[in-house]
Image (cartoon, rainbow, N blue to C red; front, side):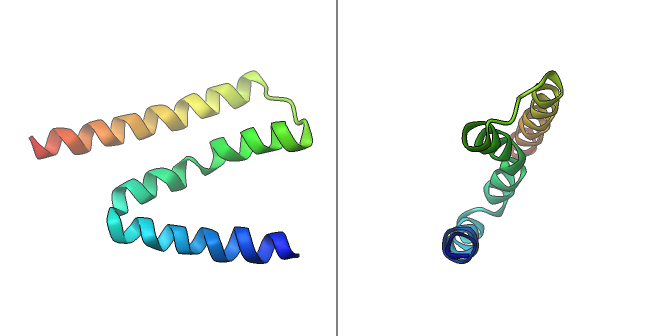
Length: 77
């Protein structure tokens, strides 16, 4: 219960609000990286297998983030 209240809820939300104040776009990038961190944590802590589907999904997420950043920087030029 302590884990759910303090680190996951309170600290994560404070970090999220801090990132939004600095740059909302960069904060949204971190939000989209949550599934990747979830895969890593489940593999390390719970010894869940990482399959080809995991790598394919991760590649799609990273590719989408890269394209979004590239389009954002292209609009500013």
